[in-house]
Length: 161
Image (cartoon, rainbow, N blue to C red):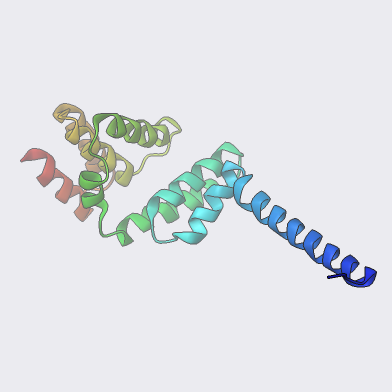
């Protein structure tokens, strides 16, 4: 079967366009910066707190004044996320993973971001490692920042039983 030269050229152009399109999709999905991945995660999962906290950290690292606003959005998402306590118990079960999560949440504290939600997460994670004194210390910090927060009462009930 012989093709005309014009048809062959058109076919070659179509194949090249397809290759360029596939390459651009690969570049967009696989060569994203951590900032772009964090921004994409926020747009995909706007009601979960963790993407907002990661994006806030990326904004903070880039020196953007928007980091505080994004962190506050993440705080609000913690209230929307009904599974805050359940995720801490189910998602993180191995001591190494718990320690990684503790380091992650402590990075916010070390950057001067004080939030009852961050301290509550640290209290629950330390409690999972049987570090009851550490858990109590973080709970007290959360209580000091927001004594009327219902999540503070819930975490107290968990770590004191």
